[in-house]
Image 1: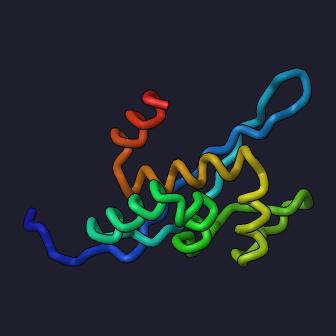
Image 2: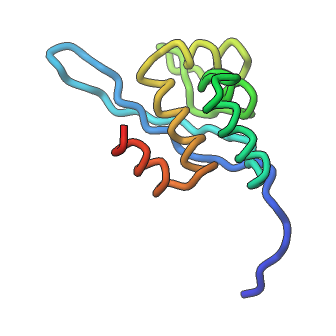
Amino acid sequence: MSFILAPKDTIKIVIKVSIPEDNNRTKKADFSAEFKKLSVTDTKELLAELESGELTDGDVIRDHLVDLKGVRTPEGQDIEFSDDLREQLMDIDYARKPLVEAFMSITLGKDIVEGLRRKN
């Protein structure tokens, strides 16, 4: 199969969440996130801004998350993507961490993210 030079603008990924429950148990859930796919040049700039402290992980998600699917109300109704939904998820630790890790995984590659996690 030939390689077709057509860079992707966005990429979708399933976000797996472990929701804490009573008695040290967790409940598994997931939703889909769509992020902007960065070029190598943009990725280098992003990393430099993160390392210098110009950007936080929250800034990165605000700038690069373009859609969410599969987030529902307690009554089971789908919640449409909005800035408010994104901010609510970024304020929940067990949703924020997997969102950030997913973006970094599609931006840097899963192997690099795993290596950084082990290093820290």
